[in-house]
Image (cartoon, rainbow, N blue to C red; front, side, top):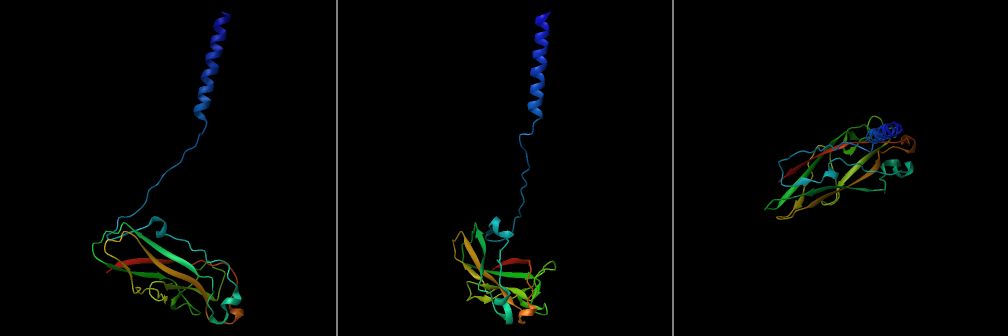
Length: 186
């Protein structure tokens, strides 16, 4: 009888400990795959579809009277899996909120509505075409992809430029701005 009680106690103890081990969270999660199949000779590298470019902390003095900041940031769109047997030119069209003092200059990108900084805008240039200033809504001159070339980098530069006002029109604060891009192969 004493042995039966010991055996019952042991079975209950082992059973309880195995239930506790199953109940403990050892880690879990979800993997979500997203993407899009496109009709193009190249794929856009996953990390370059949605980018965040850190412009830095720019002195308001460097922007007064329409000056350009010397803190220039590269913007690269990497193309991969290019399969064209012939040379292609890819044009990039950027769209977004126009900038400038009146908010109508398509050669400048305005700050978003939640921005506290004022008096400056973002300018983008096309590195492969003489650093030409990019105009929102207008295709760039294009960058070449040679026949058989499997990868290509579309290279641009972004920087801040004052909207042309005196120092007191440049309000320090945080800013965000969003542009979208579309590629067109020729």
